Length: 205
Image (cartoon, rainbow, N blue to C red; front, side, top):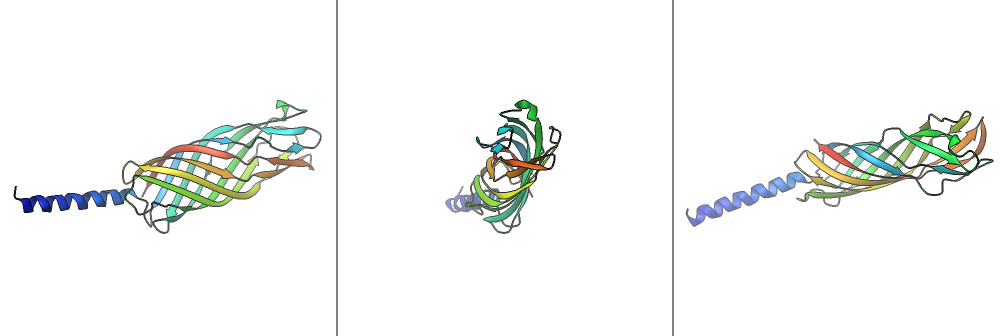
């Protein structure tokens, strides 16, 4: 093969590789959905309730989800959370008889992708936003735990497998302080502040 032909083929191959790598990166107008499993690790000190003493909230696992959109190569918005997660509660006086509650978190995040638009298979991201947590299914009769609003943040990294499929891991934090009452009488505040660690697959469109 003549040298000039080799040069042309090498140039075409390089251009193709560059295009393929660019297709791996997060880019403007990308839509994505995430799914996976996560473990919610609550803070060690969960607050103190009147009469019944120190409150403890157990760590739990559940399915995680997310969906988002990129306004530019490096900036986007994401709505994420988990399925309702049942946390077991215990207190100094009632012990495990305190029962459990279901916690349903929803986060609205603005994400930054430092490698967005670049031809890298590893695509880290970080985000900040707001959390809404709905708490229900209180097992102890008369117990009521209010919903909570607070700040939220996340860090994560995705590895591209194809243009449309990525796998990755994330860590999310939310400020969750919920007022607790029994029979309509306020008895304190539950400080949950979960750190949610998880991973799964992302599908990009």
